[in-house]
Length: 600
Ligand code: AGP
Image (tube, rainbow, N blue to C red; front, side, top):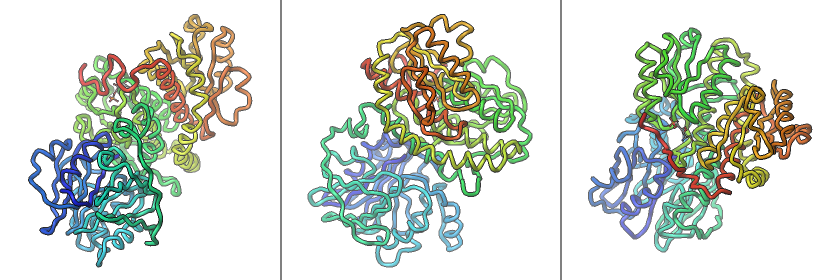
C-alpha cells in the first residue's frame, strides 16, 4: 500500500506534490520521490525515508506538471534506487499495487535491450510503456496495461502528458480551477478541492490543467460522476471510519488479496513463495520447527503449529519470545519468527539466541527493511500495508495468510498433502477475501451483542484445536482496547478450573464452526449455559442447530473447515472493537501500550 499523487495546473507542481504526499504517509513511508516536467525536460528526485528526507535536499524545481509517490515496499528493499518514480527515457511512473508477472515482463524487455536498475516490479511497467510509446502516452499506457497481471493504481508522466489508471488499487481525480489532481486517497487533495471523481477498475484518465478525459481500456470515452467530499482531514485519513482500527479491519480483504497475489495459482494447484530460499531437500529434512513471537503474532504462530502438524506432519514448538530466550533451541530445527513491525526486542533477542545454536531462520513480517529482515535467511512479507492502530488486525490476518501458504507448501514437499486437497484448499483460500467482505457487511448482530455485554468485567473466549488460538486472539484484542479482563481458553479445559468463574455475569464467545471437534464445543457451550452465562456462538452459515444452545449466533460464510479460523478472527476483532466503542475507549491508542515494543 503506497500513496501516489499527480498534478497539472498553473502552480509550481513540486510544492503541491510534496504537500499531498505528506497527507498520504499513513499509506507508506519508507521512501519517496517526485518527477516534474518543464520545458527543460523532466527532473526526478527520490530519497529513502519519510517525505521530509526528500524535501530537505530538494532544489528549486520549476514545472507545472508532475507526479509523486510515498512507498510501502513490497518488491525491493526501501532505498533510493527502488523508490518511485521509475523512469524509462522521458517516461516516469508511480505505482501502488503489485505486478504479479513482472519477472516475465522483465525477461521480455531485457531481451529488447531495456536495462533494469531496481529490484521493483514497477520498473517493468515504465519500460513497457516506453516499449509501446509511439506518439501519445494514452495509447502506450493502454497497450502496456494489457500485458499486466496484478493490481495497480498508476500515474504516468511524459513531457506535458499525464495519464492515470487503476485496477484493484484505489485512485481518485480531483477537479480544481485551472488545475487537476491525481491521488490514491482523499486526504492528499482535500486542501485543494472537494470535487472528486472516483476512478473504477480498468478506467484511464488523461489529465491536463484544463480538463480530464476518461476512457475505458479500448479508449472509448466514458462519463464520470463528480462527488463533493464534506469530510475534515482527520476523517479523510481514516477514509471516513471513526478509528484506524475499524478502517484496518475493513482493509483485510485487500490485505489478504495482496498477500496471496502472485503466490497462489489455484488453476495449477501450485504455490510460489518469494523470500523462501529453502530447497525441497531442505524442507524434506525439516523435522522440527520452533515458531517464536509475541502477542498477536504469537497467536498467529500458535495457529501455524496446528496447521503444520495437520498438513505437513512436522512437529512444531510455539514459543513466547520473552520466554524462549532462556530455554534452548534445538539445533537443526527451523526457527520461524513472526513480527509485524520486525522490531520487537524480545523476538529479535530470541532470534539471535536461535541463530547462535545454528538453527535455520525464517521471518514473517510486514515491514520491509526492518531489523528482523536483516538477521534471517528467509523473509516472507505479509502485504498488509502500514498498520496505524496499536491493536493488530490486518497484519494478523495476513500472517495467517502467509502461514497457510507456507504450511501447504511444506505439506506438498513432504508428500503429506495430496494435490487434490491442496487444490481444493487453494481455490477456497482465493475466496476468503470476498467472504470477509460479506462478513463485514453483516456486522449489526455483532454490534448488538457487543452493546449487551459492554458493561461486563470478565469475558471468556473458547474454541478447540484451530480455533483455540483465535479464542486467545479475541481475548487479547478485547483486553487491549476495552480494558475488560478477557481470557481465551481451549474449550475442553474449562471444566478443569475456569468453569468456577462462569456466571450469568461472564459472557462467553464460543467459536463453533464446523470441524472435527464441533460436537465437543457444543457440549462445552451447554456447560457454560448451565451456569447461565450469556453465550455468543460463531458458527457456519448453514448450521441450523447451534441457535438452540446460545443467545446470539454470528454466522460466517461456509469454507474449508481448516480455513474458518480466518473468518472467526474478523468476528472477534469486530466484537472487541464495538465493545470498546460502547465503553468510549481510546481505541487506536490504548493506555500503556505501544505499536512496536522495542524494549525488553
Ligand atoms: C497486538 O495487537 C499488540 N499490538 C501486540 O501484542 C503485538 O502483537 C506484539 O507486541 C508483537 O508485535 P510484532 O508483531 O510487531 O512483533
